[in-house]
Length: 113
Length: 113
Image (tube, rainbow over all chains, first blue to last red; front, side, top):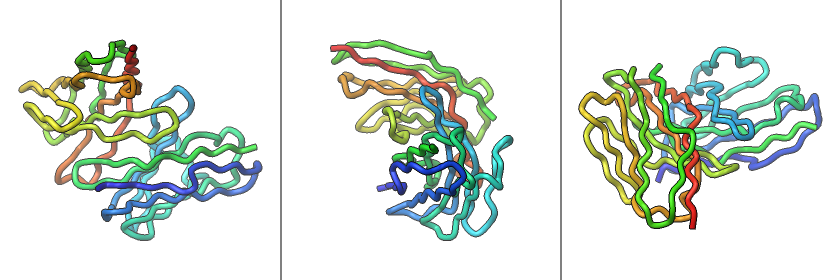
């Protein structure tokens, strides 16, 4: 149990376009999901907390207009990277919270050309 | 926010027991301690979680002293496939609507044949 999926697993896009990443909790409902990004050889950095039915809470320094988060249902949260630029290339990972534990998705590799 | 400190790297040989200690001096009363394992280009995988004393599952054991200012992850009889980065995190658990996790640098465990 406690399976979290992400789609797509990897995506390549042109600079200036927008990319949407989906995060799904497959076998449980999650009122709270989280989005992280990870650069090579670095640790995960929390970007935002996604709350079902309400606005996301962004960490300091994360642009809310750049990284749009929607948590429309108890099993789905989406992260949209708007007007992507090469510096947005990274590994994006989501997690879903069940009770006291966060379960992580497999990650999405974004490459912006 | 409780900050954690772990060794940056550890080496072991196959079949040995590995103990990774994490310090979290500022842990709050309702914080849980959670350990994750991460392989390259994958999302973190939940290993074990505890609040106090000792927790054991089919993968590892977690030892937490009475003052809860540190914890030790014990991996019995490691194999080459246990080579990964291990993260110790402290976050608000049961009863909390927050539960945000802030990752430190983690411990790179390398298992040699």
